[in-house]
Image 1 (cartoon, rainbow, N blue to C red):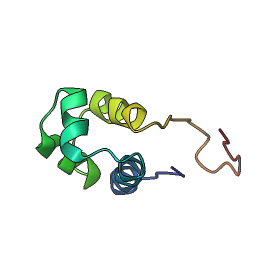
Image 2 (tube, helix red, strand yellow):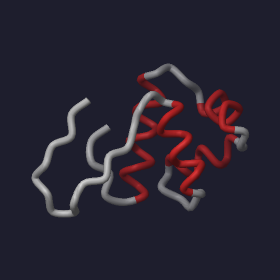
Image 3 (cartoon, rainbow, N blue to C red):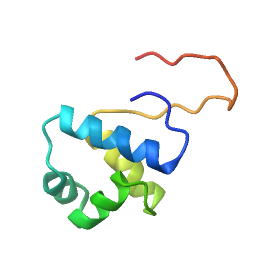
Image 4 (spheres, rainbow, N blue to C red):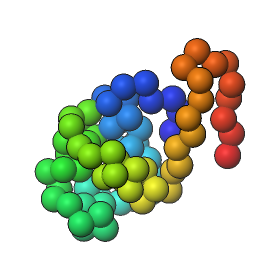
Length: 77
């Protein structure tokens, strides 16, 4: 998923992972109990709750790691 430094890059990363997992926006929305519009907004870098974003990340088979802002640390699975 790489480093997501803003809402737009996080959304793109989620969209890429969703497509890689062969999950449609509608299927992801149903899985999370939200509308497809919420998924569209998330993937476009729009405002959604942190809870929805975290659930989406997990649902597409990814995880989140917090690292210091200017760290050269690489996180590996």
